Each structure stands twice: as structure tokens, then as C-alpha cells.
Amino acid sequence: MTRVEIPFEKFSTPVFKSWGSDWFLLTSGSFKTGKFNTMTVAWGSFGVMWQKPFAMVVVRPSRHTYGFMEKFDTFTLCAFPSELKKVLSFCGVKSGKDVDKIKETGITPITSLKIEAPGFDEAELIIECRKNYSDDFRPKNFLDPAIEGNYPGKDYHRIYFGEIIAINGVKKYLDEK
Ligand SMILES: Cc1cc2nc3c(=O)[nH]c(=O)nc-3n(C[C@H](O)[C@H](O)[C@H](O)COP(=O)(O)O)c2cc1C
Picture 1 (cartoon, rainbow, N blue to C red):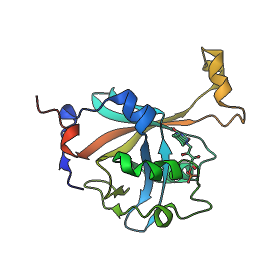
Picture 2 (picture 1 turned 90 degrees about the vertical axis):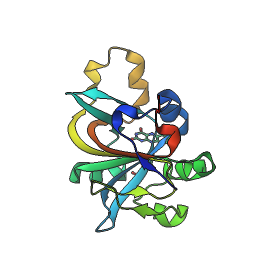
Picture 3 (picture 1 turned 60 degrees about the horizontal axis):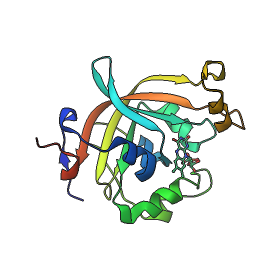
């Protein structure tokens, strides 16, 4: 996939579609050692905090990826062309505890431009992030009681903010105006 580096102020994506229906692969760990894990995410955001661009993701402690998010400083978010939706579906139901998702899906890990966590060659967008804040959802702070319904197992997500360090994408993510 031919991607170009996109300055964050020129990054453009339909956020609700990107998160809610196209999804991302969240990957944390080290490309160099080969110790990393990837999983599908559909809840999160992009924005500006502390004068810096961020991506925010939420990970339940039950996920294999959680251990990597805790141990390593960096993560990537990768978006894929629609023909590879099956990869995201697979990585959203299978755990790295049980299967080798890279082998099973055939996607190709690649080194990132600026961080330790890998991206994937087949991705049309790779966002490189360095964690700068984490916290846990506290059920007493749910102002809408309906939110609790997402947690029958009381496995409240940990929230991670990552400063966006680099964005690499195909032209459609570049706002040329
Ligand atoms: C569309 C979709 C979106 C998901 N979004 C999230 C998410 O935002 N946070 C989360 O913790 N799990 C999410 N999951 C579940 C994980 O992707 C799934 O449990 C995965 O198997 C975890 O893999 P792991 O155990 O290798 O980390 C989502 C699953 C799907 C199918």
C-alpha cells in the first residue's frame, strides 16, 4: 500500500464512520522483538488535548492486548480497505492468547516511522501514538445509568490517550484544501 506522511492538521477522516463502522486494528508491543498483539477497536476518538493531537482508545483488562498496552509506551491504529474487513472481524473475536492472528489473517507487520509498535503493510492508514494518559472508567461516575449495561462482567475499560506522533495514509486521508 502506498501511503504518504500526513501532518496531523491536514488529517481528515469521517470519524463516526471510521470508528463506528469501519473499525481499526489497535496494536501494541515491539516490532523489533516480534512481541506485539493486535485487536479490533470501534470505540475511541481523535482530538486535541494539552495542545497535542491525540487518539483515545479503551481496552478491557480481559483482552490479551491489555498486557501489551500496559507494558509498552506506544501503539498504532490501522484502518484497512473494505476488502479486508474480514481481518478486522477475525481480530475482534479471536484472542492472541489462543491464536496467532498475524499468521491466521496473513497481514504483514511493518516497522513504524517513529515508534516501537508495528503497523501493517495492507493498512491504508497508520496512526502512531505514544501513551500520555491512562485511567479506568469508574462506574460511580456513569451519569447515564444505561452505560452500566455494557459491563455485565464488571470489566470496565481502561482508557488510554496517546499523543499522535505520526500519521501515514493514502491520499483520501489528506485534506488538500
Ligand atoms: C467491531 C468490534 C469492536 C471492538 N472494540 C473494542 C474496543 O474498543 N475495546 C475493547 O476492549 N474490545 C473491543 N472489541 C473486542 C476485542 O477486539 C476482542 O475481544 C479481541 O478478541 C481481543 O483480542 P486480544 O485478546 O488478542 O486482545 C471489539 C470487537 C469488535 C468485533
